[in-house]
Length: 201
Image (cartoon, rainbow, N blue to C red; front, side, top):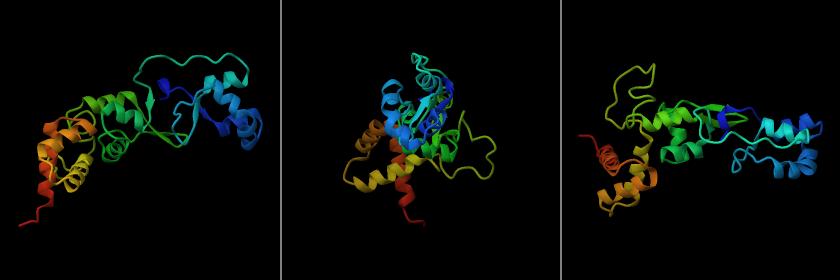
């Protein structure tokens, strides 16, 4: 998480500020730096750091503390947004592609979402666009069914194919536990997945 959308920096830019090549930085300076300044997304392949903390290290000053608590302007990655929504990171990315979430912003190639946008998605009526209803500017015919375009429909279809002998209500309960949402919603998704696989008359 980037607290309150604070400025950040990566190690390439840190090396440039220190006046050394990135290879030298990583070999000579990075170990001591990483001990003092925690990465904001430590499991990410792209490491970014709070700019004020990084600058304090370069200036050999005490490292300032980050703001505590949650804030609407916090920037979350897909894993953090997924935890807040009770879904998987891939579902968060699908939501952004299909308009259920804003597209997010890129920070050093990391795709991030404001906490306020993720919470608005969580609190919106199920399966509707950001804030409820269709996403702004959407035109064209209405959906063929309530779950058209919902990425969970693919999850439901895959679960049906993999576990055909499991009673549907038990499968729905398992999906609700794993991906969030109610058992009744997953029952509807499973029913729609069944209808989608039936041959047309």
